[in-house]
Every structure is written in C-alpha cells, then in structure tokens.
Amino acid sequence: MIARVLEAAGLPTTSISLVREHTAQVQPPRALFVPFPFGHPFGRPNDPDLQHRVLGAALDLFAERGCPVLRDFPDEAAAAGPAAPLQASQVETAPAAEDAAAETTRLRRYHEQWLQREGHTAVGLTRIPPQRFRGVIRFLEAVAAGDEADMRERPEGVPLPLFIRYCADDLKAMYFEARLLQQPQTTGEAFARWFWGETATGQLIRRVKERLDVSEDPAMKAIAYGIAR
Amino acid sequence: MPRLDCLSQIARNTILALPVQVNETSPCTPPAKPLAQSRIAIVTTIGIHLRDARPFGPGDPSFRVIPSTATQADVLQSHQSIGFDRTATQQDWNVVFPIDRLRELVQRGELGGLAPNCYSFMGAQRDVSRIVSETAPEVARRLREDGADAVLLTPT
Image (cartoon, chains in turn purple, blue):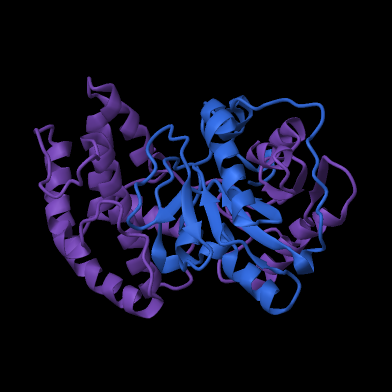
C-alpha cells in the first residue's frame, strides 16, 4: 500500500509479500511472495546466501514490463519453524529457580559478553541501562501487585502504560541476547518456551499482563495485549 | 508470512480480517535506468528507528529516517505488534532490512548505490488512512529529493 503511494509519485518500487491473499487484493506494483514466517521476509538471520537469493528475486521484478507483478519465491528454500511466534499463553510454567531480580542480575553478565562480542543490542527502549534493571524488576513487581508505581527514570513524554511495555520489551530483549550467547543454536520458539515457561521474569511479565487486563484504564488494558499473549 | 494454511485457525482469521484495500489496477513507474546505475532506498514497516529517536507508539502513522550509513548498533525496534518473532531481527537485521546485502551488491557493481536515507514505518495497523494520505506521500517527496531511483519495501 505504501508501495502504491511511492510508485504513483514517480518512484519504481519492489516489495516482499508475506500474505499472498492481501497482496493479491492490494496489488502493489511489484511484489515477491515469500513462504517464510512473520519476522523473516529475507529468509533466515546470518544466512547471506539465502538473503541474496530473495533480494535478487525481488530486484529482478524491475525487469518485468508493466504492473502489477506478483511472483513466488520457490518453496524449497522455505525456512523451517513455526509460522507465527509461540505466545506466553501457549507455554506451561514451571517454578523458577530464583527470583526475578537475582535472575536478571545473573543474566546481565552474559548480556555484557554478548554486547562486547556483537557490538549491538535491541535493549534500549526504556533508556535505562541494564545495570539498573533490578529497579525495573521492582517496578514491574509493584505494577503486578496493583500498587501505584512509577519510575524516576521514565523518559519524558512516555506515558506510563507505554513505559511498562518498553520495560517488558527491554527485559525480553536482554534475556534473548544472554540466552543466545549461552545457546547459539537457540530458535525463537525454544527461547519463547524457556522465557515464558521457566524464567522468573517471564512469569512476572505474565502477572503484569494479568493485572493490566483488569485495569479500568483503557490505555493500560490496551498495553496488556502487547506485553504477553 | 507463511502461507495462511501454516497458521492456526485463529491467526488465519485475524490476518484475513485485517482491513485491506482492494484495487483493480496498480500505478506503474518503469525504472528509468538499469539497476547497475540506480540508487536504491529501503522503505520498511518493521518499526525501527535510530536509538535516540522517538519510539513508535500504538497506531502511530509517522515514519523515521534511517541514514544509509547506519549499522545495526545504531537502531532499535519498537514495533507494537507481538504477532511476529523478533528474535531473527535481533540476531541479524538483514533478515528484515537487508542493507548490508545491498551494500554488497553495490560493491559488486550490480547496483549503482544507496540513496542517502532509508525510511521506516510501523506496519500491521488497523487504520492506515493517515499513512496513505499524509506520511507516505511525505516519504515519497523526501525520496525524490534524496535522488532515489528505486525503492525496496520490506515488511515484518
């Protein structure tokens, strides 16, 4: 749909389609349908050969005459794995071995190693450094308990419900990077099972979601849906 | 996304119920130059932004500018949907934003170059009217000012 706006403004476009049914209705000018899961339009992370094949097929559409063009990327290269991410509600929990604050502190050491090795991190939405994440845990525990809670470090202009979302996102991002350092072959699905099922922080975030679900504040209820499902 | 038959019934119905334009034809601007002489930009709906830029919020129709010199260390992803697995992006942003792959094509002489800026929206929204009427046309204007010859669009 954005493609149509750009094309009408005089910019040739090509795009990746993840939902063939939608693409067939919207009719972007040039689209390559790929059979990969959400979050994987170019196939697989750290697989430049596959990414180049997908990219090449998308760019090849510029050579075709006329619009709309819809082509299919061959299935043989389709990535294995579930079509959509495993949600918290699909994972059974087991009692966590330690409390969330201790667990976060322990995992933060692995996260520091990740940062040194990779040079990038998805942590940062809260603008709170991981060294201060024990405070984030305490804040979320207060939210889960139904107390009036806030953090001094909440960035200006970020409303409290959205800040709660960013706290959950930053913790989850840190846990994933720490986990990936320990288990380089881990998949998104394996991580979801571990995070939602076995970690104290995953279980804390689920309790936050349950608390927000019954809030009378519509903004809090809306955030609940995006924190854990 | 996968074929819809790979999803659960609930997920499939949710996707199919999203409001989608139904169009009969498509606008068409044929490329004016071969790719080897073209400057390309990425426009993505993966909801990324520079680390000190304002994150996307719920229902946010705005866009963010990502300079084409950016590395993965420079960006965060604040997409509001949890309907897609972000762990792949965390490992390697090229799986959603293949800018390193485009740089390689430029080095090989298969692409003329990268336009100076890429642009990110947040996708999977129920109401796309402001994107269609305001922010996407603004991005089109900027891309033309940037001298982009072609655009690659990437979804989550």
